[in-house]
Length: 345
Image (tube, rainbow, N blue to C red):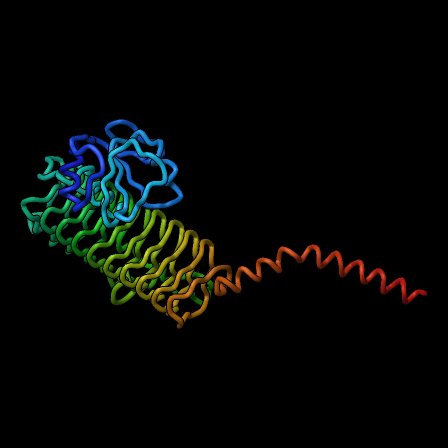
């Protein structure tokens, strides 16, 4: 990446305040800026850094009004965070330009692979698989029989896609994640052993989904486990069989959803949240980290916290009361002693 302030302003539809010929060739946090770097200011908490940053160019919002003198070039845009993200996508990820089939990979003759894809060494594309245009299959990826992968997808090293799974367009799956492994289905027998229940379904991942590393998305017992359009999963997330995650929902690391639960759209699930099976969760609900969800939630757009979850306000009140319990216990003990003394007298 090497671009002038003038060209950046044209690309972003921004307004320059400063020297338009200044060139940047890398990016940096505004508080760690240096000459030749591009930074951005979106959070007002970081405004103090813009007056001392060494970055050559800083993206700011169009309504930003400095309270002190600034020694860097500003480019005013509608949304500096979105503009910065756009630039990172456009210039920083050179690996997205890989094309071609490396010699140590295996592609079954019945597989359909577009001419402009990348398949790395030791990747294995099974019979009947389909790989869409401009997709990237990194080394050591396994794509099972009859898997369908859409256009412009990226599967990083070590990803495993089991048979019959379907992945839409513009999806990213990070290293060592497993899509379509068997759901945790076992029938208890009279002798207290367990018999495996065949998992005959698949996983469907719709467009624009991103999955972090070491994530497991289990195939359905029957039918499909589904991640709807725009879902984002952090590292170390578990999605059990027959789960459905609604559009544009996000889940932080170490959270998990048990079998057959249906999450609505626009969900926000914090880290280490556990959601029990066979539940229905309405659209727009948000769960704080380490919450435990064990009942249906029919109301939309609520904030929840705790185990079992309570509405955030009630959970905070409960926590405040819990903190007072040792003091209350001491007071009760003192009152009991006084009462016992009064009885003796």
